[in-house]
Length: 79
Image (tube, rainbow, N blue to C red; front, side, top):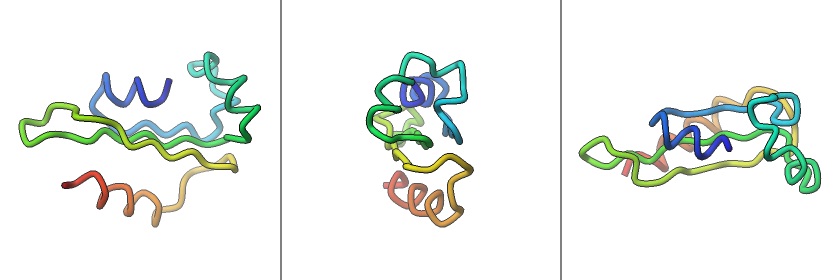
């Protein structure tokens, strides 16, 4: 769900605690089963600023993602 939202909005979505966010209830079961607590979904934009894909990082702990991770993601998606 966070990846879909990031693609639809063409903006980064951070679910600091995906299991606590009712907007992402559709993925609660699989996230719980897989040990996922945080999700960072960042759209990859084409040169025409259209969404070409989404880079999604799944984190084992709840909480805001570290600044270093967000910087690395930004570097990866700016191709």
